[in-house]
Amino acid sequence: MSNVHTLKDIKDRGHRLGSTYEQELEKKLKIAIDFNSEITDFNEKLQAENSDQLIASSTKVGSQLISERKSHSERQRELEAKYTAEIKLLKSEIKTLKRKATLAQKASSADKVQILSLETKIRELEGKLEDIDLERTYHDLDATGGGGRRASPNKLIRLKEIDSLRLELERVKEDRNSKEYTIECPSGTS
Image 1 (cartoon, rainbow, N blue to C red):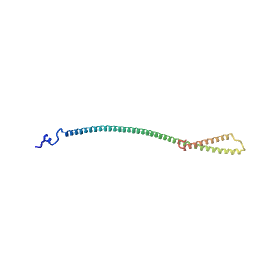
Image 2: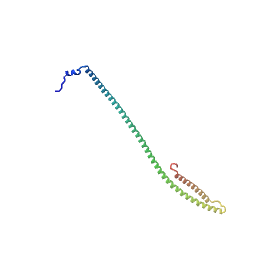
Image 3: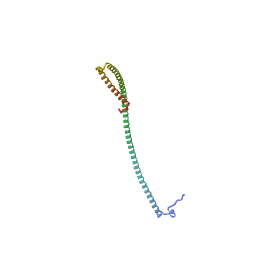
Image 4: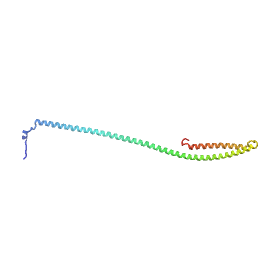
């Protein structure tokens, strides 16, 4: 059998139950248990506070991120709207300029045709003027050789016709020159 000890055996060798030493140990144990309980309570309070602070911080950061995303999205939409409007405006201006260029080319072609027509008319009038000048010279010679006669009514009519042709010739030349200037000038200055 193994060694079995009774209280009587322990009594002589150690401290008795209910002794002051035991009571001191009980007090120390109770203090340690209370202290441990206080530490546990304090730890729980800290965790709760930290948890609340962590949740508050997370919520604040989350709301800031959401706010910044909204702000960024709004700025993005504003920029897109601005650039879309600018693009539409530029496309419209390009379309208008293309139309103006086409009209200018057509006008230029029409003016060239008119200039050619005026030049042809100038040549015709210059030819008539030369013919009339030759005829007048011929008649003047005829008149001076005839002993100082006065000019006949037909000659006066012919002289008026010559003057009229000269005026028309000058007008047509001026008209042609203004058309040539219009074609040579850059568009928008005439």
